[in-house]
Length: 212
Length: 289
Image (cartoon, rainbow over the protein chains, first blue to last red):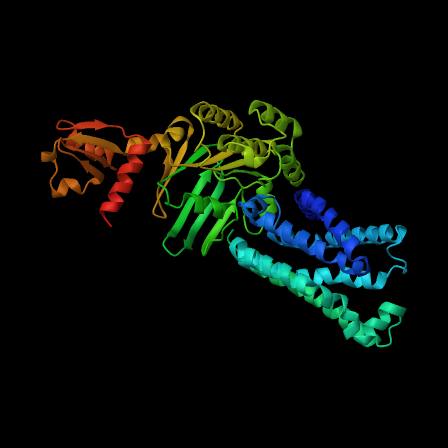
């Protein structure tokens, strides 16, 4: 298990310069569109994931990872576990952005924490589609996928923020915290977990026997 | 004397290349040289040992354990030095070491510092800014700092200056003084192996030509130099490979006793170097295609 932590630490060492680049992103987005702050917890996390995967893929670095005394299964597990700190990083940055905007008077409404949680939880779901492609396509294929993926996320930015408008039950939960349809909620949560776990199993199947 | 590496009937097919039914064992406590021309399959074989590529058929046992079932335990005891840089290019030497060290339970920081000073590795320099020689030195420092029982080195001397090349070979000779340590050293520069190797594995066109002690190879092969009039159809068949010129011929015979008996009085008989054995074997296999 320690090796997973070392791999997560490795991802943070590799992406820390990229994290610094996210500061101007938050400053710019916080200044131009502070009302949409909840969505800011998704895009940076996706960028961090794409960046860490790209670094692992280029210049024979997968050979380095495979040469380490870590089973391949653990390499994949660690990549999925890295989603948690990346989510937390984006979540905390967004929270700080809100507090700053609130203190400066650019926002006066209370924190929409359920909406923020929803946007944060969307990241592992998106990563569940991205990671099997990453393990399957390798370096060349991923360059195209990365561009398409980031464009899709950007195009769907407003769609994600208006998710609550499309699903009234979700809107009610976000606004009041009340859940009338408990069964639907349970099914949604289970589906969410099944998709992530299924993605993990698929990545395992692809990468465990892949030549690097 | 146990085997540190055992390959049983390994097969791996690519579009234009195939490793065919490779079986070999590497002995503990020795330096084994893996030689062969470019594209012979040396790197593919090493990548299979390191679990980077998977054989279509066959089994690999490393340090007494199946390398697929016990990936982590096996690699904990292996130091890998590649001719290509496998490290993160944008990290500094110090950062890269910090990434690697925690993965090894037997990591010895004092040993690393010793090698860092010996190799004059600049801790603050990015990996991408290191010369090829410095990258190899860094790989070697890492491999020697985690108490590896087996060093697997893929073309480690390519791109090195002659001084460090010699220093590295001396270092490897010292490393092997502990009889529990073993080294597998792939190269197409056979002069390195003439200096330090105990065993030689020769691979050509995806097949093992021989796996023998270095001394017994020179006892087995004979280099014959003489006039062309000595070569008739039957005599040609004895040769592994022949090079003919206007002045005469040079050829390699794999049955030294028989060759000496026949050519002793009519031609020059010499002990071939590894390079000559490799050259004539490759030349001979091309002629038979």
